[in-house]
Image (spheres, rainbow, N blue to C red):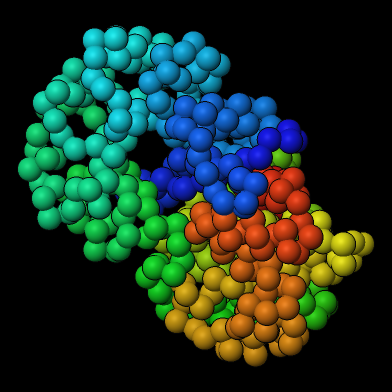
Length: 409
């Protein structure tokens, strides 16, 4: 891992079905005073490109999805961007770019080479007409262009073969209205922050999953675990579907619970049960932002815990960090109190306090994970240094968490 002072963030981009199809890659550098700063847009974008290709790797950061990367004029005009794989990235033209014949010609050339182009933070303007015939995606900022005045703009875009992406979507109402108006892609805190997600009813399958988690935590006999699955055939199907969907690299399908336990081991089965809590209804798939968020948060906390001196060689403690991460999202996603979660699972006082008060070492790890989700790099830097973690520790944890499918195998 290079010694550069950088952190990379991702914000998911979803389709009309609510599935993650891409990420915008965000760059931040930590200054000497632990303050997040971006020296300039081109420097930031160049670092995103270099770090994604060399330090991290596209598969690790993006999984099977595409990455949106912001470009200023000098980087857009540079031959260096041709190193990027055309089928994996979207070149995002910042709103500060001036429309010139040179810019139009460069965009036309990149499009002919096979690149996908997007206009960022955009409002319709006739001066962009030549670009509208070239670019593939137009990102509309809902703060800059409120939903109430979008209809006329969308009508003016209609003659052009472009896909509309609504960004800075912060409420369910905004998402539904944009979807009804014809937007195909969506990005914003409504999807990326669990605190503003619509709550779901904690149904029977969720109750069964909590029971299964308790059995696994107590190291119950395999027969007991199998019987718990037999009480909910639908849950068995959903769990096996999830396991087979995200267990990349397996040579054969997992056919039943006994096979799953034998093939993956109890450690992994416990993790799949935790993730299945976020797929307890038919609307959640392995590409659901709920599963993505739960998995990344849990894996991030696990990796951070593995770097803490007090947990060195203590695999059980590292596993508890993972479990704390997944359980921490239940209260905001389901209509269930955290007290009910902790009592149902008979959790230790240490984990209970982490979940309810963010206290203790697991509570501090959880708070740190939440700061990164909020892109609060300044406070996050202060926190992880106080815990004795280095920026390299955090970067390694971050990269492995983004590649959660790989770490769960």
